[in-house]
Image 1: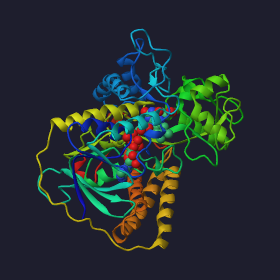
Image 2: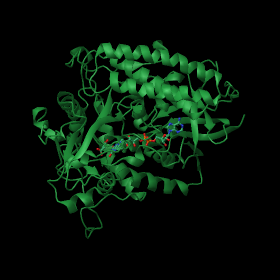
Image 3: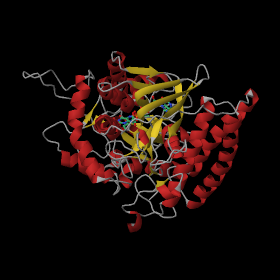
Image 4: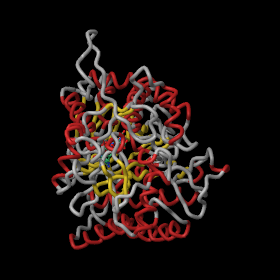
Length: 539
Ligand code: FAD
Ligand code: SIN
């Protein structure tokens, strides 16, 4: 078997993985494994921007408060403070790497720029740096440009990580430590083992567990599933954020209408043109995302309509076309002129607020294994993520993780990594089973584990997922691995974890709303839901 050795093994090439690699490359050789084209990531589609305290009339205290309010009592305040306070410095680093955020005018005499700051739900100030409505593309492209000039970094595109290699799995004594990962070269079918002194999960979220999502196809929760299988602690998976405004059109796949559009004055209405958000929250259309998504869900259920509309015709056309060129052009390509008519929208799965439990340096419960970005659960988001805080968390934690690994070098381990074992059956006719199970899980999660939940529906979903898991396991061990099979196995595990966490939390809080316990409870006010493969590790 082909074995490759690096100092740092990074799984994923979104903002978290790339920024980490840039930092780590000063200290050793870095391999980035990425399962499709290197730019394909949620990062690449981020619209609204990145939150940070930039102006004199804003303060760390306000950003901290807004984050804590959105998080509904479950944020870790020390983590929130650290990330918010390091934000301006990280933004400076991004700008120094060449990322261009929109400015509010010409450079001043002293050479400084004033930035055009956007506003999004739950923020008490304008503090979102953005590049028009394609902030993620700007970030992804610039970071990839920097990496392309970095001799210490090697990117393996179209390579998908299968599983982490740990000392425990190899039967070695002592505390569990991660020493690398098995990786499938999707083009050749070869499985390669990568070993490294630190392995960093930067694999993003799990939106594809749901049939309707703003996320790109890569978001299949691979990092959470791999970490879970390796024995790491996972937390708060019930807190899946549904973005209120995904474009509703039969031909549009997962196109987001940024919250920044509401930040600039757009208003949610029913299909009859009636405003409704005043019934749900004083901030109306700019209320926190969980409240807006539930309000839309409730209006749609009441009226039987398949969507609501977002009306921005109150803003001048040239302003909309200049501030949101991508949204304007995309809507127009579907025959919707947002300057003249309201945009049909529906909520859809957007962000995984829980994940692999880490400290603020990205360290997981397994030595040598780090998790940064959306795959991780640092405690910044609590029960509900504040808009534009996730790109921020990814950069701050990537920087901290690189520094932590360098300062806490683990001793060398001389371990022979065993050959990859897999079934060798190949039967293309059976592919239909994979696609059937894939669709079944995603539909089931949408119908039974969506915006509004009940214990009965969660239990039903749990039963179905458990049956599907058995079928998938059999496939996994009998057949040669393919990326479709690996992703199916991962979404099934992540679905199971979301359901298990949702069943544990006997209350409604933040993004988790259940009709059986419609109010928050004292008992759960400061408790995370933790899941581990070996329950003894959960405490
Ligand atoms: P990603 O950017 O998703 O990157 C994950 C990487 O891991 C990809 O390269 C993927 O191919 C790779 N990968 C996954 N599994 C494997 C595997 N098994 N093997 C190898 N590689 C693998 N947040 C904000 O803060 N502001 C915004 O304006 C904003 N807008 C958004 C708009 C959209 C449409 C979406 C979908 C999300 C938005 N978010 C926003 C959320 C934010 O974009 C993500 O949380 C963030 O980009 C995640 O970055 P990441 O580096 O953790 O993961
Ligand atoms: C958006 O632009 O609405 C997405 C922002 C985010 O998810 O933080």
